[in-house]
Length: 149
Image 1 (cartoon, rainbow, N blue to C red):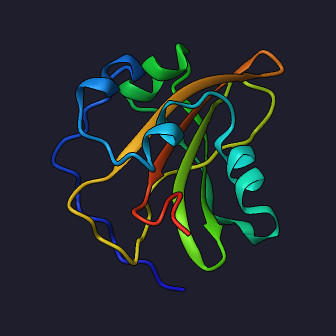
Image 2 (image 1 turned 90 degrees about the horizontal axis):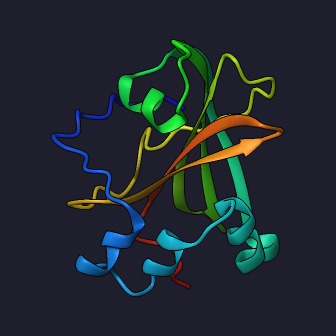
């Protein structure tokens, strides 16, 4: 499969979950954005055997200032991992997990590589979680099919 380069996103604005109530968000998407915990586990619970996860890419690279801030880590590099989460053949989420080099577990995921659907805008969530006391930065981009039958 050949990937086309994704055009630069003109602006990304990360807001705390508390501000979500002030914005217009599709009612089907709102609970997915504000829920705590691992998104993949929640999607599995809803989709059952119709859930699939596909590894898109994995690499080591330099962390951006935003990633360092999100991780609350001083590392300059980390492991990146891109995945897509599906229900049947429909991609619901592109995800990115960034693991700083100081973490022992090398799990990661990355968001938005190549999408069949090009909506005007996308909702995403970003969270910092700890796995065996090692920080992971998870960024998940929700596609229009998310949560729909």
